Amino acid sequence: MSKKKWYAGALIVAALFAAGFASYGSMARKVHASAAAQQKYESPVAPRAEQVKALVNEAYEKFKTDNRGKNADYIPYLAKVDSNLFGIAIVTTNNQMYSTGDVKYSFSIQSIAKVFTLALAMKELGGDAVFQKVGSEPTGRAFNSVLAVADMPTHTGNPLVNAGAIATVSLIPAANETERWNKILAFYSQAAGEKLSLIDEVYRSEAATNQGNRALAALLLKYERIYSDPPQAVDVYTKECSVGVNAVQLARMGAMLANDGINPATGERVIPSEDIPEILSAMMMAGLDDGSGGWAWRVGLPAKSGVGGGILAVVPGKGAIAVFAPPLDEAGNSVKAQDVITYVANKLNYNLFSPASVGWKQ
Ligand code: GLN
Image (cartoon, rainbow, N blue to C red; front, side, top):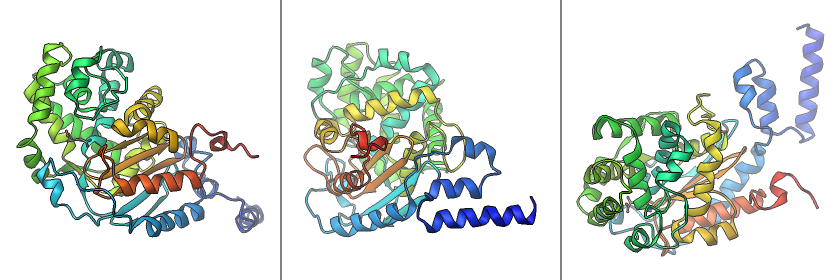
């Protein structure tokens, strides 16, 4: 490029930026114009950097004193986690990261894992097969409900409640349980763009107290809705719930979903494009368990909660927000995480059911 052209180009970029028109996404596109592969998948609708940074801090300050809710205690380990821990992370589809608070603390992913096992099962077997073997109907009951298994025509309900999630684990093709577990963990790591591992103490605490989940698996066997040895499927399920993540890793896993299945940090395709809408729809229907209807009403974003205190919400094409704060409401969803995501989603017009989310202006 001639010096003159370069100078003219630089002037235009500088002028755009100064005028406040340049989103971080388009700046990044100009800076990395040579990385053709990356550019191909870069979202044209990633949010503006300054705006997101300010909001993350604002939300942290606003909700850090909200002390409603209570740590989960049916898994002994979770009762001991510091209730004041609080971290927020946003990762965008163009791999920008904004975070504040306790974002290096590794907490157990718990039920958020279910989303990624669902994704792996779909990748291996196809969406239709998983839908047929597990289903995607909200149960309207607690995530670990035995009644839902007995009542629902599918028995499994959906892949994001315990029964459906245990059935989904049992679907992952593998020669044995060790191979199945290794496959699941490797897939989560690919989704996060870095190696994840089990928090052994969480696993032992949960394995010693998971009689309810073992009962669910036994009941699924009666209805022929579990596809590998039930106790072993529960064991792998318990392990997947005990995987440690921090808020940034979790947000990156969500950003991969928002980015059509391509991890924005590694550029690697993790999930086939056609699976993304189905996975996000499952999150919308059941991601906050029996709080899902209220969540859809107020926030309008696919999300998944875990009793470890994490919630991950996905904004298709734009990015993901992960919040960690252990105290939970009655449905088992982190109170602060719901506060923060609701606040940020409203400010940024993220509600998918609002025309404003695709740029509609009054
Ligand atoms: N491991 C937990 C359980 O099986 C997961 C529940 C959750 O996070 N909602 O009860």
